[in-house]
Length: 151
Image (cartoon, rainbow, N blue to C red):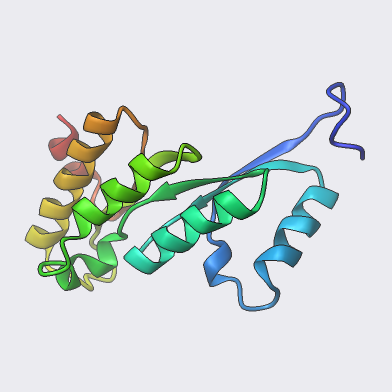
């Protein structure tokens, strides 16, 4: 399939983690995706380092866009990092950052206290609103609390 032909169908990978692929390099993953008809990839940050990498991949590859944020697994580790201002700096500096996230609540593994997950989720929502960007929400066994925060 020639994805440059606008009459041909194509795919968009809306939630990739190129920095987490173990079997191949990001370059190989992007190349193979294009060969399979994936025209665009949204690479989603799930940590500060993952968000930096996501921004870097969006600058490196024409068809890769980025989201920046902190997964709820890491909420308990973020208190002293100033993470939200770092996430905002990334979002402001790179026009290919098109969303905030991955953020939300994860009550399945409970790797971070629920109150810290909720606080971080709210900060991500506020940043998304401030930057007028969509929000990528992670919700695992936390449906009611996600809904309550979003209300």
